[in-house]
Image (cartoon, rainbow, N blue to C red):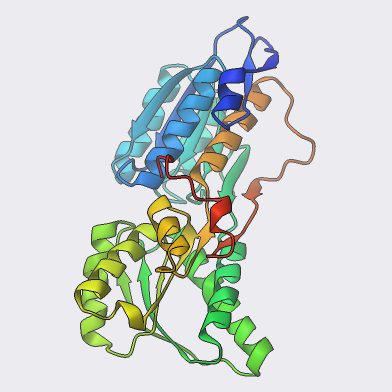
Length: 324
């Protein structure tokens, strides 16, 4: 494969991505295989990856797995058959996409996993994601301070059963909350009153919250594994006239609607999980791999910087013009 030279492009820099680009001395094809485009977060991720790759001079293919593992496997097969050089893979299932990643790598494709966990036994360059544990712990610490000694009676709204990212997110918050309570007061008073499944969507969060409210009238914290579900839960609380009784926190995302509510003092905190940064770095690493210029010591797991977004720092992250 011909080696390309990276150049900086003003258009990408102006868009805030600062991605490298190829000189026009060869072809570059990037496949972006998303397990779903049905949520704003994933749509933003795919759009950023597409834009950065195109600004680098690459042809781009984007596929929506529609939350169907069999379809996503077929998407990857089609992209490899079409001759892609780089595969950006957001896997539907940690184990179920291992064979697809291995097949692509065996065909000479540079595979970078993003966001949802891909089993590390698979053959890929690196997995790029926010640190669900670190973000969650920071959100949990903030929540302990906000409760100020009051017991935590939590309604937990999770994404989908068996999802490893969701598991890491909720456990990170609970770990941070417990550790902060132990540190500040010498004991921990935490009870998860119930768990609902929102399928990562606003409507799912609303339905799950309606059920949890009926069963547990003493909820004082809603913990969701993403902002979309917490936004849905907020609508259910508002309809029930109980919004003022509950602290809203999300383990991750930073969706602009949630950030505006944080700014307005109507939503507690969320973990920083910037889809644009994850996607940008994935394309950059893929281009570096094509140019035989991967950084020395690159780990198979690459984390973005963690943060809990609260009213104190939300202005650093809120962009009303963002897709997500």
